[in-house]
Image (cartoon, one colour):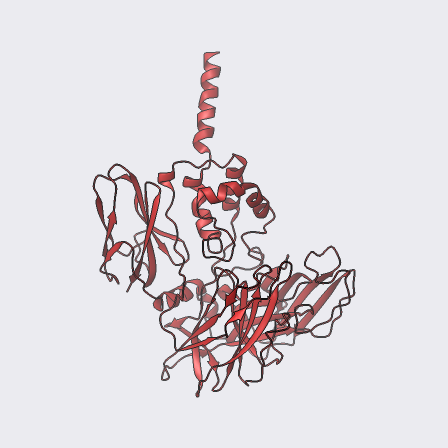
Length: 519
């Protein structure tokens, strides 16, 4: 009997020790995958950074994660790999669900990972051209979104090559998404009154960038071995399509886009094109039915390197897929979105450049749900819907960033090259903690205010909220001030790239942060 009791006690102890807690297992997942939208200044509408914020919403979070509604990541991960994937992997998903199932234990608050930091303004330093929409008041009432378009002159008098594009919302709490087009012929006009404008009227007006909450600037590799750019013609206009969500009525916004150009004398820049390669403007969606729509682009006239893909439908979209069929009859996978969500559109940059050889046929397939079972259907009862420029119409488009292929393109690690180029241009702001020298070349000293006897943790994060290096973990302070050295390396001892990093401190449950730039 004693042995049975002892055995039961051991099993219970193992179960308790293995139990997932907020501080030890779950917080870091929320920091990386949820907090980009759900932080105090984010569009998520509520913060999910602290245990006190997350635990009361456990049931709703469980439903959202179980159905893959959150975090929003429309593409199928089984079809193609992209840079900066914000979806939960299987282990992360199960960790959070197990934690919720076990009644959301907090664990030791002093062991909670350090909070990530999210820039309020522009991430990139300087910029060569800033184009801003006029101050605009959202007309999005309860149950009704507001979609408006602005055509704004650039004022540039000579052709330039774009290496980075940063979209900065004027009011992050109400900008659900913004799509940025270059109107090379200056033919577009502003529509800020209909509330239904979501696309340009001229097919030559090209989509080049998009903003969704948590997005980083569109930064092309712009250092050796790969320098890419998009041409902006003299006299071009910038065309903004803005989406303000329901309930934002009365809030003001003045979103801007900042362009970074190559120097005028820069050489060896490979031209990137952006176009809706897949288009269909000749379909009709009858009421109370699901309808399949397809389109294709004839055989490519030359070898092409594809950098990104951006599928586009409106509110009746159910699913969309794009792929290529090579001359050898191989399938080249671009994107598969099994559950289309109009609110989470973006350019998805491939993890590695995708090669489409000469003769490849580009194809697209979509399903539209024009029934009353579709909660996004703008018409009740459903009516016949045809292609058009307004949100109540429909579209079937697939955009790509692409360029003429060169041998070895498909071997480039785009995530690494984009991150390196992004870090080159990041801004500096004032630190709340003492960090010097800042910027650092070899190492820096970090001075932390402290309280004797309390546990403290110190972590270095990158700009995407990923933990780079644990400087201190669960140590007890024995002074009123702590001095640490960061040598610019990660947890593997590898030197990190140039750019912006954040030192985040948890002292007995009190958090503080500082920004560091590495040269």
